[in-house]
Image 1 (cartoon, rainbow, N blue to C red):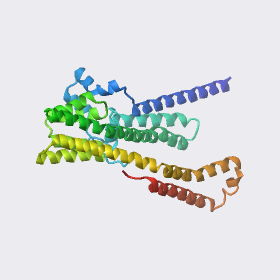
Image 2 (tube, rainbow, N blue to C red):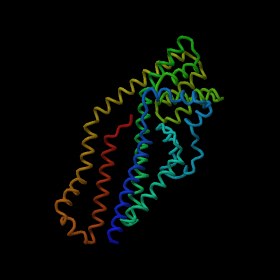
Image 3 (spheres, rainbow, N blue to C red):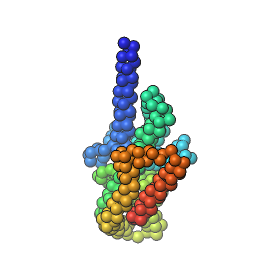
Image 4 (spheres, one colour):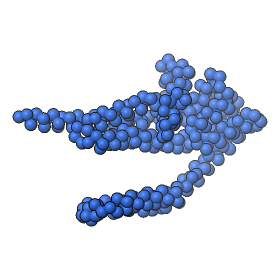
Length: 322
């Protein structure tokens, strides 16, 4: 009877741990891949203002300061506030870190009742630290790609407003009001910056620093040059929009041309790992009989290093920067 009670408690603990880990992982996944409908995205900043938030409150939320990040000196985590901002996630870096560390410790502690702690802790770190960071990188790349695709439309909208006599600030506000995220939020941040005392050139420079793309830097440099020398700003914005569209077309062509090479590199990188896995599963004694040999471990480390080096070299051969 006592054994049955212990078995029941262990089963309950396993089920509770699984459900808790699943809920925590799903919460982090939804936070990092939050999707908004076009209506919600287009009116996100305006709805905040309609609910009573001031421009300073909106600016503080959409443009958090990165210099207050406690882990700014830690490699790999120093840019976490900026990456969260680039991904369009409003949660602070401190709160996200607290959630990740707490979930990691709880999961590792619960799992250590069934497996050794030296195994449970790496698994917890993988689930609640490494995977969320990878998901954040993917979210950042997707959002910046979407912003780059929206930027020519925003510049054309500004150029049309300037041609009919609207001031530059009004055309920027029209982009923030009429277009969808992420370009609407970014231009809305600039509008709020200028409204609360920042210079126009500084606002565009901050945009380029936040976004980090070459197209945004082209825009910031163009605005700075035009602000200092004068000229036809509407024509300059229209020309820049055409240049960005041409660059997007060129990027798609490069991706299409290099698709075969990238697929071949992926297959060649995975073949050694697939062979090792299939051989080990079909004939366990193939490597098991020689695992006690003194040369087995150094040779295995050497082979693994060569496989990783091959994958890195192949990636560099087909990874075009554009």
